[in-house]
Image (cartoon, rainbow, N blue to C red; front, side):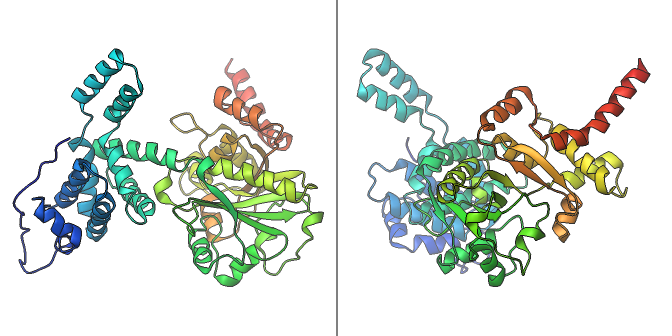
Amino acid sequence: MEFNRPRQLRVSAGNPKRRTPLDLVMNTRIGKLLGKLGIAPRPASGEGLLDLAGALLSLRGKASGPALASTFFDLYEASDMAARLAFLGQIHGLYPQDSTAIEQAIARWNDKRDERATQRLHDATQSPCARLIGMLNLAPDGTRRLLAMRTDLLGAPERTPGLAALDEVFEDAFSAWFNAGFLEMRPISWNSSAALLERIIRYEAVHSIAGWDDLRGRLQPADRRCYGFFHPQMEDDPLIFVEVALTHELPGAIHQIIADPRTVIDPHGARCAIFYSISNCQDGLRGIPFGNYLIKRVVGLLQQELPQLDTFATLSPVPGFARWLSNELGKGAPAPAGTELRTLAARYLVTGRSPKGTVLDPVARFHLGNGARLEAVHTDADLSAKGLRQSHGVMVNYLYDLAEIEANHFALAELGTVAASKAVQTLLEPAKSENGKKKKAAA
């Protein structure tokens, strides 16, 4: 693909003495090299980024690829959000698939059907944006910088066709790069690096960590575990992590787990492993599924370490319940309490569906989609401001019964049926009976 090399630098309006991000980039060694080649990126509205991306795609050799990719990121990170989004929204449309090259490669394949023809067909059908993403990954810390770029894309106020098309390319690339088979699962302990521990405090998304003493209480005691998935290019920056409490029985409230002080138990006497917080750390990996692999890997590891464990479950928030309940009861209506609140929460989790037909609650969708069973519903379980705001204090247990995971997953995926315990089904029986009475009355 030929790169259009502008010979004149377009000057931005405003103070001519003011140094722009592009001025700083072009003053580097690679910027001077671009100047010698006649490539003069333009500074207006992300055009300099487009020009540098075009330069990367036009490279014949790969020796200068990492330096040019680094220069691109320097300019991208120095640009304001308007320029970033202008680039992200335009790049896919500027570099579409080369239909002529694809037709020639197909003709060669039909004629030869050898290894070279296979490679030519592969190269011709690869999206230019996919190739660009691969080349940008050559820059120092390229993987993390690409994740930040996709975070910008996902945060755009308007999802234009150009952004949507580019996001599909990002998702395909990241699904391959962050395949669970390529990731390293590591324990996270109080003895982990300070950089990693600081990130755990910052990334905790379910039950906020109120400083180092709070973190110590979650990592140091003998009846606590924490594990994370890491990418080889991001040594001390987890992709996702799960906090685990070893307990004698299923907990019904978060304060039973994170209370300070509390009684530490002997892990060899524990019967239950409770996943009480699962935090995705990288916004740029939204939609890339590997959390389910983490839970299954952790279950296997805990079974090896503590073979007496017989129950693997969660204590999970219900983040969409309060919003759903407000729609059901009417805005401003007080939430019920006790059994009625549990019944409504059970109905929301078992029958609530999105317009696409998926389970409505995002946390429920994750665990039920992994083959877990909705085991119990608890009120007054999370009395924090966040817990009261998003679920009126309701929390639930999802049970991972290894013998039933596949059947539960099949029932949800193929039949739309949520696996629920007898206790949860009992909560739903009054609603079923009431619906039956209404049908008989109507008849």
